[in-house]
Length: 196
Image (cartoon, rainbow, N blue to C red; front, side, top):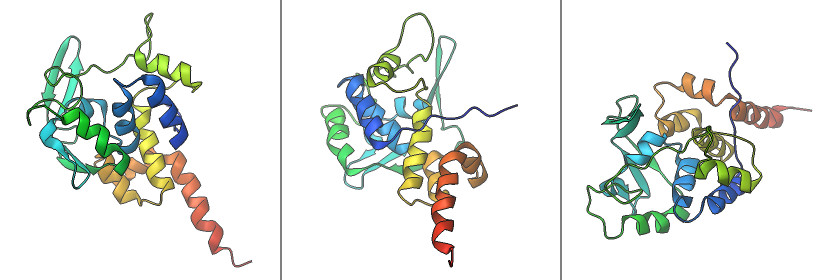
């Protein structure tokens, strides 16, 4: 079976997508694009999982919709982890937490898990409209996870750090899922080794 090529966005494209998604969804786009959290992990984040001082998000739960039922449990690999986020996200994340109880959900109204936007169907989701308005190619919310890996690799992160960020069980899985940006990284490493 051939592997689907993943979508990767640049810093500018993530910013454009967040802007077009509107103030209600901008922060979740940025968090997805810079932390690589799965949608279920994002939607299950609680105020108590946010550490503004250390700029960390603790991933303790995963909310997955099966049919019309929402199942909340441990993260996919059953391993709790802490993921860093860029400094520019501290203020918007702090604003989301303001006035909410520690156990309240970080995104949305604090009580109801936000739904994953549809990537197909007759009615376009806010995510698909934002993609169109940004002039970006068709992709899914999950592709923001690959974007995070790509941006981390471009900034010089090693594969073990990216593995931990994504919550993959092995570095081999990270390399397999995020192969395209690693190909560019390999070229950047090999070029300086040329003695000529």
